[in-house]
Length: 282
Ligand code: 13P
Image 1: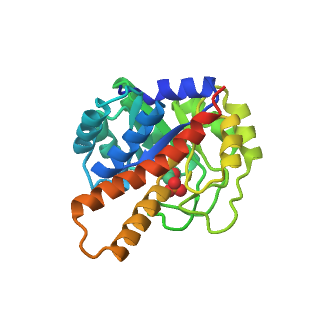
Image 2 (image 1 turned 45 degrees about the horizontal axis):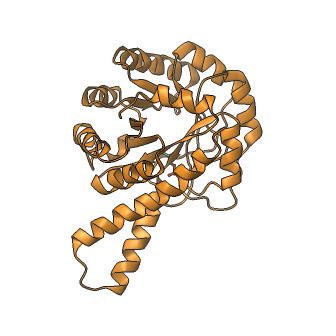
């Protein structure tokens, strides 16, 4: 069943678990992710990043999610627009039927980020669509095609003020995860997260850069207010590696089989993370 993101995250925060938000951009990624969450009977977020609008448009995306979510087990699903900087794209996604949007003003100065985010909140809430925003910035790891800059930790005091002034439903924080696979040992600072969580009360917090984050770190983050965890790169790495291995072994391989292999490789990663995120439920 399609759900507004806020309702899913509020329940996750209350029961101390997190919901996986999986980057999807074609039939194989959407189907693999939906099959995994239905198999586990857990809620899930099917996300389309603004940088994948060349792969699929919001209307096609919603149509595929809607047709696949009806098959089999009924689990709560949110359709989310990830990392979007254009208000026109946000409006397009809302009109297409997304139940949640992320406005990414993290590269703006604090006051401008508040102003633009507030504008998005007004537009989205009028259509009963949830809004995520971001404060701070993540560094870039390996194999990512998302944006990444210098690591700037989220300031707990600013997080509180930002939420009060914008009315966002969820806040993405920067605490040391990276967009992409880690180049060395992950240095996630859970103390910064604890301080943010103390300041923001019930507001659900979002962890970007889920790929490759160690299990114990993820569990610690969920205990301290993280209720949505984004995963992109590891899905792509698994698909590409499996296709590469297969093609290295088999010369005559039909594209229809590549498609099924890709779907299964997506499913593997989504099963791993969704199981982990839900396992800590209290
Ligand atoms: P990873 O690519 O590191 O999993 O990060 C995904 C993400 O944060 C998407 O918004």
